[in-house]
Amino acid sequence: MQLFDLVIACLLFLPLSICASPSAVKLTELAKGSENYIIDIYGSDIDILDGPRDYYTVLIFTSSNPEHGCKQCENVYKFVSLVSNSWFTDYLDSHLLTFIKIDLRDPKNAKLFSLIGIQTVPHVWLIAPNPAADFGNPAKIFEDAHLEFKVPQVAADQQALEFAKFLTAQLQRSILIRDQNPLAKFAKTFLLTFSAIVIIRKKGPSKITGTRKKTIVSLLAVAVILLFTCGYQYTIQNSVPFMAKNDNGGLVVISGGQHYQFGIETFLVAGNYALLAASLLLLTYIGSYKVGEKTAITSEQVKILLVLVNAVVLYLLYSCLTSIVLRKDHNYPYPYTKLF
Image (cartoon, rainbow, N blue to C red; front, top):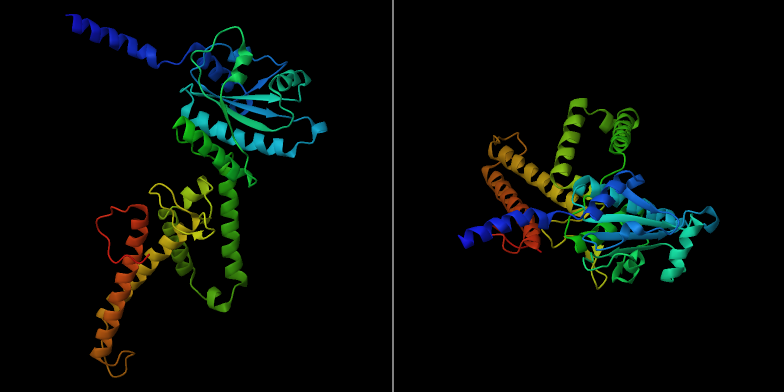
């Protein structure tokens, strides 16, 4: 009976132990009513951060005051906003992370900058939870250990990706970066693609414009299917680099992870699939070819030789594909010849 009572007590306590604190829930509600889910601090009032914290805190020290002329502050707010929107899209009710902005546009916030000793902007801090923090002195949060995100000097999309990786490493939550306006991006892509097709049909070389419309559409459809099958959308959504460099400065074309790829891998794998399909079709065509005196293939010996050459090409192409897989999964059980 005592064991049964103990189990019941644990089950009753479990929901309470996994629930977020009232302060974390309050911060989430404040974030819902804030632009880009980033809570602004006014008058150096940080009472919302008072007491024990069971959540992570991103602090953005910045200035949107035009007199300060901080262009980098604009970039920081842009990529942090992108990440905060993506975070709350996926983890709205997790109450695990809050974004706080301390902006010098409000002169009264200068008191906090002086308290911390910050002389420059921008700065982005990540402060871990502190369940042992006392009530009555919210400024104690600045004394807790923190990690500072070093803003890389790259495009805003890449900065957002790096910041998302930074948070993911600490929070153990994957953050999928989403476009702010996917409809506009789709319209732009559609117009560019449509315009390219029209220009090719109207102004392209005679060999291209003489091609039937059905053939062009078919080739474009195959190309799109190959690109999207091989991870084009992943590379766009995550703004991955086309290629990378190792510690020695050499180019890295194929990433070593199963859940990551560079942009060039999309084209390599798509090209490999396309060549495999073309080689297989050619092998079928040669195999059913009728040899005659007036045909391109004049003897069975030449036909057999072409079949063998094509079979070797097929083997090498498939080996190339399995070699890529082996770079990502060394335990892959069905490789052919390892080419690289």
